[in-house]
Amino acid sequence: MNNFNKLKMYHMEKLRYAKEKQLVDQPVYYIIDYINSLNEYFTTSSCAGRIILLKIPKSGKKFEADFLFKSHYYIDFNYIWYRLLDIYKNYEEKIYFKQEPFILHVSSINIDKAYEILNIARKAGFKHSGIFLINNSRVMIEIMGNEKIETLISENRELLIDEHYFRKLIDESNKKLYNVRLRMKKFYDIMINHYKNL
Amino acid sequence: MNNFNKLKMYHMEKLRYAKEKQLVDQPVYYIIDYINSLNEYFTTSSCAGRIILLKIPKSGKKFEADFLFKSHYYIDFNYIWYRLLDIYKNYEEKIYFKQEPFILHVSSINIDKAYEILNIARKAGFKHSGIFLINNSRVMIEIMGNEKIETLISENRELLIDEHYFRKLIDESNKKLYNVRLRMKKFYDIMINHYKNL
Image (cartoon, rainbow over all chains, first blue to last red; front, top):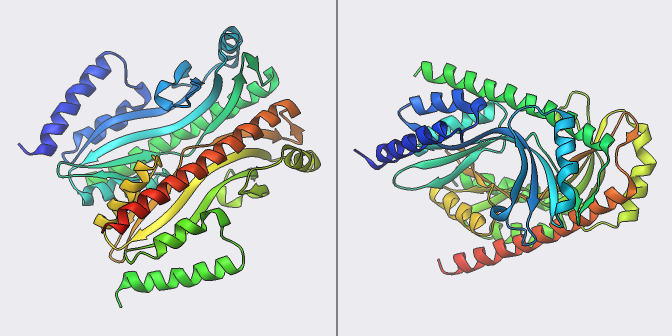
């Protein structure tokens, strides 16, 4: 078996385990399952788009950041607002509010196949997508949307925003998350249509 | 002359014109001039990172958005605040405040050279970078930082944020812009060091 297929087997086993532990976002299942059904590709990580509260460490290092809230679905304003009121006083660190786009890492067997799926992603409107790793075993592609909100909302135990503004942010984030899901569906449809003809 | 060199000549002429008309950000000059001095590369567009107020059309289409404020340098809070107070009542459309990262499009003569500069970019911390176009004439790479702020601040002639919050956003944006410039310098240093040894 070649290196690509060995890697694919390893990642499929990891995915099976992650699904079992509910570590994979449900709204992205249909996309990753379809891609993994194709011989020339496999997925390594994904996010269906989400709304989060993130505590940024003083170091600013991303991998030390903590999630204070995380949802991959539309959120109810009251639910996140009271959660925020409950917790912001506990932290001197900055708290950021973020609505993040769809993100997907795909490995492909060669450059041509990588470029093929990259073009499909760009057609679906995932403009910030590209090939970011090339080696003997595989080519890796990052596919990413651009719907996002990202802003500071608390620092030094002080809440910097009021209820009215936060409600606007949540409305806006829910709308953007809806657009993320439409674009994911478009990506899926273009893929299905493209690969069924090969 | 091959296609790559023809394209490079064309883009170098465009760049000369754009610099003359002051359409290129000064803080990015040293980076694009260095890359363009290498035979295997040329740059096609760049942004040194910036702080903007953007009016989003009802259609949501990005190319129809209008800049209400734009700065590639640290900004004075009072300057942008009074600008915002002057204008927000004129617009029913959404106004977004954004601090955007460094972004650079580089064309290279082949995949190997594309991957080489991509690796340098990623070493410098420009994590959202990748190859996004491959054709007979060239390979195109997008290099992008991830320091950003992006949030709604006005809609329906209503200002959604207060002075205290906006001051925090400007402080935070100025700090992030400073980090953008440090990372650009790091990218430049790694490039210089890499290509002088070739």
